Amino acid sequence: MEETKFDRSVMEQLYNESIKIIKEGQTVRGKIVSVKQKEVLIDVGFKAEGIVAITEFRQDELVPGLDLDFFVDSIEDESGAIVLSREKARHMQSWDKITNNFDDNELVEGVIVKKVKGGFLVDVTGIEGFLPASLSAFKGVPEKDILNRPFKFKIVKINKMRYSVILSRREAIQKEKEKAKERIWQELKVGGVYPGTVKAITDFGAFIDLGGVDGLLHITDMSWSKISHPSEIVAVGDRIEVIVLNIDKEANKVSLGLKQRFPDPWQDIENKYGSGKKVKGKIVNILPYGVFVELEKGVEGLIHVSEISWAKKVNNPSEVFAIGDSIETQILSVDKDSRRIALSLKQLEQNPWIDAESKFPAGMKMQGKVKAFTKYGVFVELDSSLEGMIHVSDLSWTKRIAHPQDVLKKGQKVDVVILSVDSQNQRIALGLKQLQMNPWPEIAQKYPLDTALEAEVVSLTEFGVFVKIDEELEGLVFSNEIDAEQMKLLKPSDKIKVKVIKVDVEQCKIGLSAKL
Image 1 (cartoon, rainbow, N blue to C red):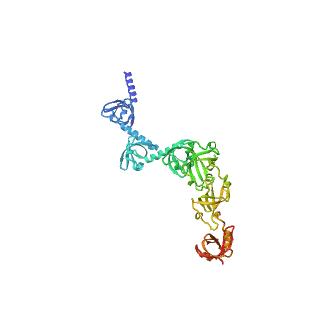
Image 2: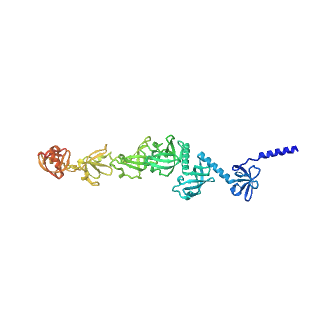
């Protein structure tokens, strides 16, 4: 009998120790014992099993033997069973998670379920949060792209008494950008190739968004070819892959390259383009001093204006060439270090200056075509290969020619006399007045010294007054040979009395004086 009492007391003690101490309002771990039509029996290690309405479970949770968390609503109901809640346990877990995220300044994910006055209602793991419109960053976004969609949020305020949560998507976006930026800074390595988006374009390059970190792609690192503006290579919004050239974390600067992803075409340039070699290319740029020709992608050469033609003077290459023209040239020289290739067109032709002196002897008369004008003369095409120039002083024996266009017109055929040929300097001097006899010996006889004349004022200069003696003859009244007050009153077409004080047959000039 004593032994039986002892055994019973030991058994009761062991039983009592095996029973958990459970209090109302706490969350406990329990195992599903059985699933009935309207309720689920739960073993939480208490003297009685717990009962939970079947509606509080998700379908995938209704598995006998599955361990889950439950909220203790009541230690004992009318039937002596413990009353548990699966929904409240989930709610408590969600709230604990939100509280921890708030304390740790971590982002949470939620689904926007409804638009309300002043903002949106958000389901954050079973807890209803409020997203003010001012913190939503949804300006201009259609409602269909917002509702029932998951987004990241930052918890900016919680009320533990009311279980209320205020959220901010704007700050979440900023934080994610900062995280992405930090991650990118850790991942970036010199020499690495990374995808990026063209964010902005300037005259000196383009800014590339690498996913939170902006890098500069300088214009000189865009292409092995010469470009005038970054917009020739990239446009805002383009997705490109770039190589990191340099990283300066202290200054928050990243230097990027695009051309470095491809082989340098200048690496073995001297082997590909030797001096004297004939090459074909495409004209890509035209400037006053020459024409740039693309020989291959990233390799350009220059035809200087002096290398365009042996004979014709080219003042404006754009009148001869057009961008996009295909052209054959000859390599003159290659400078790998300076990345320069000198090209020539005229070297493909025979040099017409070699036999120019024998072909155009001095005194020869021939016909040419007026090609161009300068202040000091007229260029005349003699044949298909050479041009000569009539100096302004060789246009007339007696008239002072201020503008060569007053005597000749472009395209006009004109007879000329060869005055001299300089093959070494590639010059041919032509004369127009030399087609006629020099009238100055006769002029000297016709107008001896002290001859008094009435002349017509042609123009006034600082050094004197030019006057017309007859239709084919002009003379100069020196400034010291006319009264200053009289000179101030003169104007073109006025008549003035003068006398001859000098006739220079060699210089073809006649000097006059108004001091009679």
